[in-house]
Length: 336
Image (cartoon, rainbow, N blue to C red):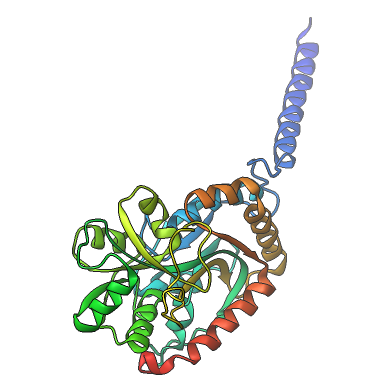
C-alpha cells in the first residue's frame, strides 16, 4: 500500500468513527422516556428541586419524599427534596417565590399555613394565592389529639378536655397560625380549655417534644401518628374531623364524644412560582397526576398513614379559596 492510499483509507476510517459517535449521541438524546432516562432536548433537562418547608421526619416530609420517587420516573430527571423549615412554612415558600421561573424549583404547600402566612395583617406580606402556579393536591390529613403512652392524667379525650379546663397544658404547633395552632385556639374558645401552643419547625419536632415529656399534648395529623399508634408508642385520644379516619378506625372523632365544631385538617399539594411557562407547567401537572394516581404510591402512602386525595390544579385552587374563606370566619380567634 502506497502512502497516498494509506492516508486516504485512514481519513475514511476517521470519518466513519466520527459519524458513529455523532449517531450514538443522537440516539442517546432521543432515548429519554418515563423510565428514568433524562431527555436533554426538552423540559425538564436537569434536576428539579422540591422545597419542603418543614423539618425532616414529619408526615409532610415523608409524603413528599415518597411521592417524588414516582414523579421522578414520570419526568425522567432527578427530583431532589430539600428541607427549609421555619416561619410556619414561609421560609421555604419565600425561597420558592424568589426562585427562577424556569420550572426547576417547586414546593410542597400546606394549608392552612400557606393562607395564614399572607392573610395575617401583622406579617404584612404582599404574597397571595395568585403568587403561585398550582400543580396538584396530594394529601388531605385530618387533625388528631394524642399523648404519651405513659400519660396518667387523662386517658380519653373527655378526661383531657375536663383537665384542660382547670389546668394549663402545653400543645405542639408547627408554626404560628398553622393548623395545629388554630386547632388549640378553637378548643379554647369552644370548650373553655387552657391550651398553650409551643411552636416549632415541624411535625417531627412536635412528636419528639411530646415523647420526651417537654410538651403535654400532641396536636398533629393522622399521618404524623399512625405508625406510632400502631406500634403502641403513643395514645391517640381523638380525631378532629367529621368522620373517623380509615387509617385509625378505632379512634373516635371529637364530635362523637360531644365536642362539636372541633375540626382541623391539613392539605398538602405542590406549586411552582407564578410565571412558569404554560408548557412546562403542563409537563409538571401531567407527571404529578400520574404519580399521585399510581396505585403502588397510594398503597405506600396508606402504610405511612397518609390519605391520598388527588385534585387537579383547578380543583385544588377551588379548595384553597374555600380554605381562605374559612380562615376569614375565625379571624377573631387569631386576634386579627
